[in-house]
Image (tube, rainbow, N blue to C red; front, side, top):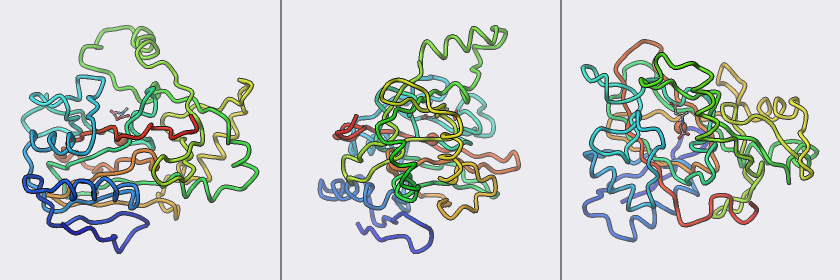
Length: 293
Ligand code: 7UC
Ligand code: FE
């Protein structure tokens, strides 16, 4: 197995000659180290069936099963299915993650590692945008860094919660009330120290963040969130902000990334082409918010 930095782009490393069936404990340990150092790993030439993809998840950490069953793979609930296969409308949810977010940031205990394994790669634009929120925090003006440290940020899935087949004919306010009941707003540390890299992470995303509260429980004005999103590149509709990394992939690539440090945004094909990706997410052995939560 070889791990080499990607030559183009702002982050990432490619992993070649990795075979799960013959991987040693040292290989797995190297992958687990590299994901924090290089932020994104592109494991090349994988041929895993769904069960083997789940096995890889179990090798890297403790799998978190997605809380909404409509995303589950029909035979392996550990796999979240994004996109649909022609002729099988029941496997997968179309157009997931088309907004800046960190996975599970609206949950009490988010997971440290996300893996995606594209199954059908469309001809049109396909890839994922990423922003490193450790670098983005380091680049903020000192007065804004000081203002944010010690505050909490409200996270909720309410803005992007997708209507499920079982919600048809339900009053929308009832569905909204259910979302608040199942996933009440979480007030996470706005800035926390990454338990492995030691960097300060700015835990704010355009999709899931709703504002800040200070140590006394008072809300900061909405202009603070606006400024943070603007300065971190998350309001750039052209995706040309120098902080944005576009990670493309081809069939056989399996992506593993640091879900603490990065926010991401799916880039979906503009045409309604078949596209499907499997996702497995895992908790590592470190507390998500490091020592500062
Ligand atoms: O449909 C979706 O894009 C799912 C999204 C709201 N949540 C993904 C996650 O893991 O937080
Ligand atoms: Fe996501």
